[in-house]
Length: 287
Image (tube, rainbow, N blue to C red; front, side):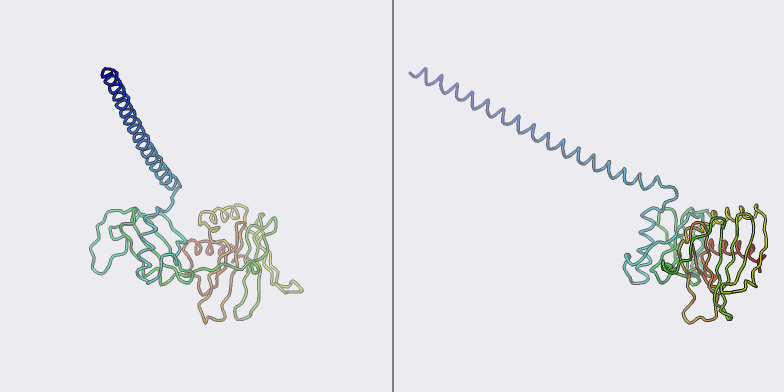
């Protein structure tokens, strides 16, 4: 009897011992599974983050987020407003001629090394500000002088947009206002004809027809593309409050319409000023 009891206890102890070992193995395996799962999740998260960064960086000439954030934070601090009230409306890459980003402060000494970076225009819908930065946004400077001469555009209401261009027309100017209050339309056709009429002239007595070469027409179209005229699509640069007797010009290309007035011409973005100048050289032939 004692022998059977001894055998029973030995067998029972062996089973308990085996169960404990199996439990330990399962626990370790479960822990490894959790660790591997967490590691995989972490790796996937890192991969997704990396892919997101890479996705942002493959866009040609795209403004890096750290640069945009640095500019918005600086302007928000200066103006005492929230960054969400500000919007970057234009930017382009620049190589500044010195370490002060071409904006020295007082008697500041600037290194003469070339500094690649960005020129950025920020708006709150009423006013624009121009910034110079380096490539990373660790150096940002507000161009106070440029801000004095910058207009903030507004969207032209859809109801006020002129009709699209006719099939053979590549560019159109409508001018209205001034002392006489008359409205004129000048169109440039693909074949080089330049036609000017006065709107409301029942006898069509003021119609003029001139001609430029087809090559000049094509050069003008290429210039509009280079000056990125299309990015001003459906924007209006209004006259200062209280201004009177000014002439409003509405320019329409195949890409869209932009509006400005004669007293604010010098305050337009440089690219738009260049496009207006190129058009005026052609339109002068029709007057």
